[in-house]
Image (cartoon, rainbow, N blue to C red; front, side, top):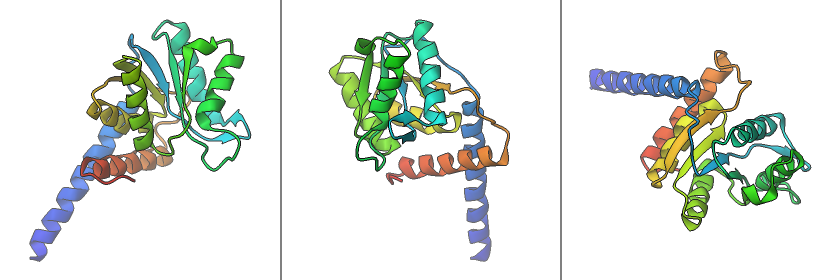
Length: 191
């Protein structure tokens, strides 16, 4: 019995390590390709201003937009506890200030998690008859986001925001955390 548990523990540990490595490997790949829309996953905002992480994501999306990757940008994210602003609306306001036409920006202002954002993105894209997207987020987030959106029937390319330090112990920890969240989602748990 002890050998069986030891073998199971080693198998789980090995699978977790492999998935963490896969998350990390994918975090370094920029797949930006022609698509219907660029989707920017939300991050913290501070009283109507994007956090450094959200700003980096928005700047990257803006660069992709200006390079002609897609004619639309979709900003996502709910209030995160802020009674006045949402991440999605802050993203839109920032992009408009950077001279992105307001008619080229779609906002999803309600989701409070990756899974909720993915469901809302799917609904928005289906209603607009759009099927392909380039997802902009932190690199460690892309593995999970892409697979969730693909499960919703979308064609998805990942494009990590620049400026991340992908070889630090903290980054590997974030990859492991995303691997765990993906594994949980894969078996029907939402975390």
